[in-house]
Length: 141
Image (cartoon, rainbow, N blue to C red):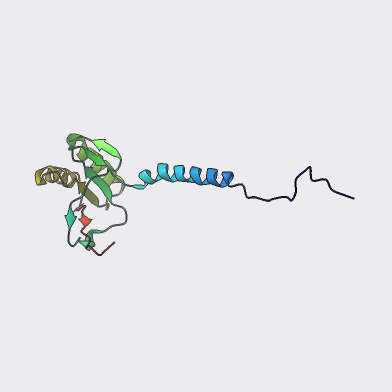
């Protein structure tokens, strides 16, 4: 019994990489969409310090962010300065021992950040920690 090859001499088996590329591109798109959602609070450029204070670290603080344009955010919700106290108080009623992490943009004045800190303390926050970035040495990565 003879097999007909249809005019082809030898059969080459090649791997089709198109489905692999499709899957990789879909995963890339998923990661690009999900990654910005992982950041808590509003994105601000924090001041840089030599030695950050390690004692104020907590597992899940309430993040209050003040952006360079003066807008105030609690986690992902924007508030004006008048409504901020009520929002913080409401969240602290649910979790009374929760700490507040205040992230102020480095371009803000001390007075701008101090106003938000006072509102948080008046709302019942027991401790308000300031968010900073650790200054890295030239050789450190």
